[in-house]
Image 1: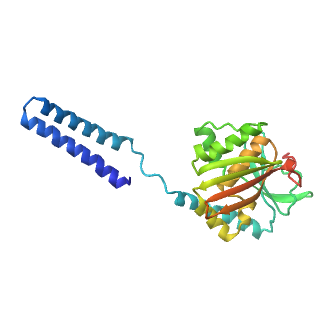
Image 2: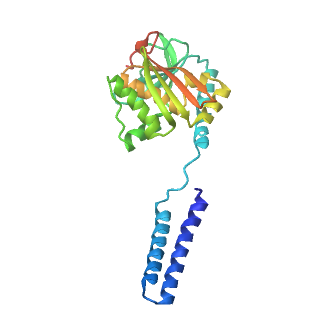
Image 3: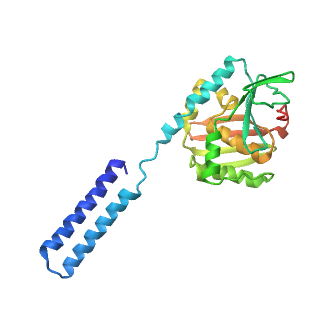
Length: 263
């Protein structure tokens, strides 16, 4: 129901209530018919008021919501590429429960990534240090829904990822999270934010792994916190026909070079 139709329906019920009560008063018969008119009028009035009072307005279109953060992801990836950065992002959990994002200049990230500077220059490697674009979303989930990410609990972590996507954010018809060796594979079926993926991938699929949109980076951040190790967005695949998104997350323990300590 559109907003205009809802308001029209509510006001129609209130007008009908006024008409029924006026008719009952005008007849003044005091019989069962009058009582029926009064009850019907009262019911119409209460229903109309409830429609007006409880309606929260039309939700934002998923297509619009998907496109809102797209250019931000593209812009960061473009800036990194212009700086000569070629690696993919690592999401590193910190002791205070937050996550930092490290994008190495090459495929091999620096061993130590401490400090607050946005650009890390060390003998063991250089990288860009960012606050993940998912940070406001993750904080919102923790503050409003008291989201607790299970630690050292594989099944609990997978269930947490599915609950966040399907129940809390409602961005997918059905989400499955499963282990494939050390990797975590998250599949979002009937994904509602496909237009955002399309806009980003039209520029370059590299944006998905180099920076990550709010959703993909959220998945990586949750995995990093739950596993307790740096986690990388290894691969992102979009099936536009089936409206399905597949994200492969690789923890540092899965092998290959990864960031070391934060200090």
